[in-house]
Amino acid sequence: MPTHRIHFSSATLLLLVLMTFMACAPKKPAVSMDLAQESIIPVPVSVSATNSSFELTDASDIYVQTGSEELVKIGQYLADKLNPSTGFSFSVKPSTANPGDGNIYLSIKEDAELGDEGYELNITAESVHLQANAPAGLFRGIQTIRQLLPANVESSSKQAGPWLMASGTIRDMPTYAYRGAMFDVARHFFSVDDVKRYIDLIAAYKMNGMHLHLSDDQGWRIEIKSWPKLAEYGGKTQVGGGKGGYYTQEQYKDIVRYAQDRYITIIPEIDMPGHTNSALAAYPELNCDGKPRELYSGTEVGFSTLCTKNEVTYKFIDDVVKELAAITPGPYIHIGGDESHVTKKEDYIPFVNRVQDIVLSHGKQVIGWDEIALGTLKKNVFVQHWADEDNARNAVKQGSKVLMSPARKAYTDMQYDSTTQWGLHWAAYIEVDSAYIWDPATLIPGLGPKDVLGIEAPLWSETVDNIEEVEYMVFPRLPGYAEIGWSAASARSWDAYKQRLAAHGPRLTAMGVNFYKSKLVDWK
Image (spheres, helix red, strand yellow):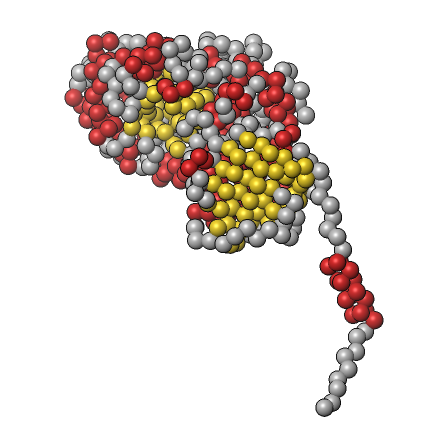
C-alpha cells in the first residue's frame, strides 16, 4: 500500500505552533470588580458580588431564548444601544440555553416573585445571563446592564474600551406598579421626536408611564376627526403666541408604538371642564352663551369652562374619548378636572360623574387630578394627588388608589432655586435633595402603601419651549423619582443616593442630556 508524505512549509509549521500555544495558553485573568459598589439607579432589591468581571468584546454576541419574536426585538434594542459606542457589530441569535463563551443571553423563566417587571441578572467571567418572568422584566434588566458598563457606552460614536461589567447576581423588582412622568405638550407644543426623546430618557431609569397633557387653554394637540377644528384652529397657538401645532392620529399612534417597544404606557389627558379655552375657541356651541372665545397665549388658569348643562358638551366628550380610546392601547384616559375655578361646584360634581361613565363606556379606566374626588368615584378610578390632601384621603375613602404627584416635591417645572433660568416656584423651590427625600406611602397622613398606585413627575411647559430646556428641568431630579417608585423606602437614603447620582454625571453627558449640575452633588 503506497504511503503519502505531507510536507509543511516553515511558515505553516510556525502558524500551527502558535495556534497550539494560544489554545493551551491560560485565559487572561478577569479584572477584580465589586458589583455591590456599582452606581445603579434605581437601587436594586438584592446585589450579591463575586468580585470578578465580564468583558464584552468584538467576539461577543447577544442570544435570546428560542421561539419568541418579542425577545428578539428586546435583544435588538440592546444591540442598538451597544453597537455605536463599542464599534462592535452585535447580532441577535436564538439559543435554547446560555451559550457562555463571552456572550449575553436573555431568557424567560417562571418566577412569580419577579412579577411583570422584575429580573434576575447573573454575571460571571464567562457570560451575562438576564432572566425575567415576563418580557418587560428583560427590558428593565437591560437598563441595569447599560448602567454596569462604562458611562461612555451611552455615546453615539465609537469609544475606547475595555467594556467591563462587575460580576455577581442582581435580583430586582419594583415597589410600585406605576412610575412615570408627565409631559405638557399643550402650553408649548413639542415635536414627535421630542416626545420620543423624553420616552427614551425615562425608559433608561425603568419608568413605565408617559402621561401626555394634550389639551389646555393655550392649545389642543391631538387630531379629532369628528371635531376637526379642535386641532386645526384650537392648536394654532401656544404660550407667548408661537405657532403651536398638533399630532395627527397617525403621529400619535407612532408615539404609542415607540413607547410600547420600551414597555411604557401612554396616558392621554384631555383636561376638563376647565383648561378648555382652545376647545371653546374652536367650537362656540361648547360655551353656554354660544359665542366663540379668543385663542389664548397667556399663562393664567381657572378662567375657562365647558358648559356642563348642555347636551352637546357630552356629545363632544363622548366623540373625543371614543376616538382617543381607539388609538390608545393602554388602560387609562386622564380627564383632568383641576383648577376649574369658574365651574360651580354643583355643576362640577355631576359633570365629573357623567364623564367617568363616558370613559368607562369606551373600555378605559379613569385617572383625574385630585379635585375629581369631590364627585362619586366609580370602581377602578385613580386620583392623581397634586395639591389637596383632603381630596386624596376622600379618594381612598371611596375605594380609589392615589397616584402621587405632590407639586411641592414632584413638579419638575419648579425651579431648583431662585437663580434657575426656567420654571416657576409657586409650589416650592425643589433642589435635588428635596425631590428625593420623601415617601409616597407616608407623605399624606392617613394614607399607606396599599393606597398608592405609584409616582408621577409632571413637567408643565409654560416656561420651556424646547427639549434642551425640558431636560434641564427634569434632570437630575428624574432618576430620584424613578428610585422612589422602584425601590423600597428602607433601601433609600440621600447620602448614598447622591454618591450614585454623582457617578451618573458622565453617563448623562454621554447621553447628551442637558442637566442641572446641583452643588449638592459631587459630580464625577
